[in-house]
Length: 158
Image (cartoon, rainbow, N blue to C red; front, side, top):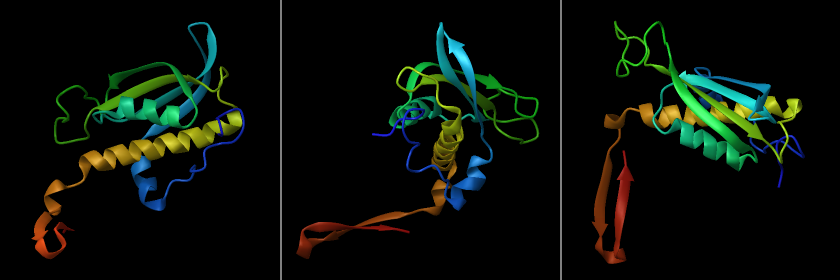
């Protein structure tokens, strides 16, 4: 199994073109850091406040072979206003969240040559979470129709 900073980067580092625009709203950066006396890589992620993002990113980091040794998040100003229920005066952007993870791969910081791949993979995860929570739900319809001859149900998504 490949591990960041040890053997090979993940096999899916390139964002599909459709997700590239969605990923552009996220700022993801890696830097060397010390966390509770241990050398680690600090991963900072800033973007729209999406419910469940912190847990999703922690899971994604783990799936990429990173050990999360510390994590946290806080609200930051988005266009001068944050923490006001998701809306900015005048209908602007929702509040921004800043997540910080301290990670290692097999007890070491992430190798600098793998950090760009890690950033790209995390931006893809953020974009997918944002798309899942902001897609227009009223534009889809699911129709269930019994199919008695086959003892089944036909599912149509329109």
